[in-house]
Image (tube, rainbow, N blue to C red; front, top):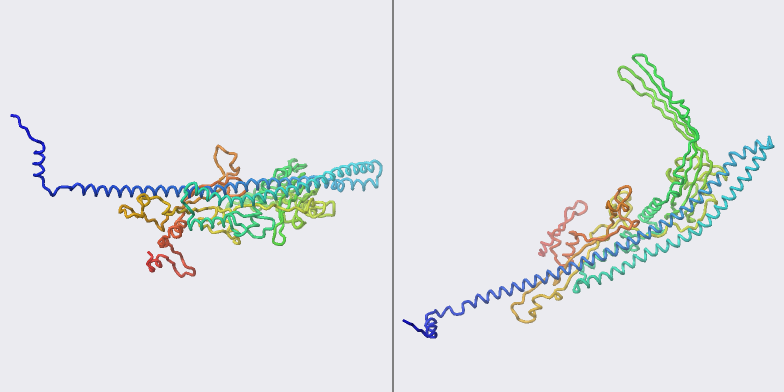
Length: 602
């Protein structure tokens, strides 16, 4: 049987059977789900946009801080190269002074030869005459000719030294001005780089109030050496009268002295030639022993003596203080002497049954006496820094190639011209090669931050800049972006309309902020594959402007910078809630947390 139905009749019957109250129920769920979905999408968009802006802002701050520190590292490396060039020029003056002193020694040797040989022969010739008189006359002629030739060479070296000293002073003055110029050009480039890097990386960003404060603190402690006497970079000139400035010039002079070539440092390497030694005869030591059974005695006598031909000499950069200022000069000493020395040692031991062997006498005696054979001196100094006899007596034993310590009699020898000792002769006109030298040039240096504590302990008068975390050599950059410059859902949906789906994107002080910190630091390479950079003594080298190993890097911000940024940059007063410190005089602890709570601010 075939059944047939009309479709419209079946549909009508079904609709009549369904409850009327269930119509449109799914629309509510759809609307709620759609609203939540839209709000989630808006929140996701806003958080993504803020995260993107924050990353862009952080990148801009990092790039700015690193770029400025990199500029400063390049400036310090430029300073190191020019300082090394100036030191090299100073060594050239030392070599000329050494040459003059060396030839002056040979000229003096002829005077002493005349004193020790020709004059005694002349006395003998006066009584005997004949061949001896002719011999002394011939020797005198030859000696005068040799001395005249040496004196001509000395005059030539003196003339060359004057010209070279004036030329070196002019070149070093150019280097000194170049350092100062580079220093202030870096200031200009810092400002230019600051604006350029921020604009290129985050066009809507700007320095925050804290950023301006931190940058100003950095500039005052890095650049303004004329305003801030404890700035990181210091300019030291010949008129320096401050204790720390004098100390830095002494460090510079020590670097110059440490850079001398072998000829200037220790001529002939401390030449010594033995002419006679008693021990070569095999006469000593002498020993004997007396044994009485219960008691025994033994003694030993050792003695030696000899004659050595000694050569000492060197050129040193020294200073004398006048009117509260230091005047540096180059001075050279060369000595030939005959040294007579004597050694004596007596040892006596006693033996008893109760104590065994016991030493009762151990006596040593040694002395030496040197006789001058030639003494040469020379100096290039400022008029206020000319070394005199008392200045030479103050020289350390190891100065001038060890001449004061190894040959003290000859060094301090006092007789009439031309047989004067080194200390006496240095003050004479013939030793003053040039007395209008400008001294050490002005130069830039850095405060050795790694050694500040040690320096402060050794020199309480030194005044150093407190490390606040954002002062040189550190740099803190604080950037903010205004809320109105950040595109969020409010801008997409037109925040001026009454659209209920707009979301409020409040930011603290209506700004998005960030911090970045960098530092310029010194690091001498210690790579085993680049051993030519390594120090021979294996020691760690502090930062200085004598080696070009300055670099820049980003570092973590400290608590102090973050607290200040929250307070100044983000207007977060609660950042002070953890600040406390001890009051002076044992008055107790000052805690800002209590005050902020009393004021109802936290």
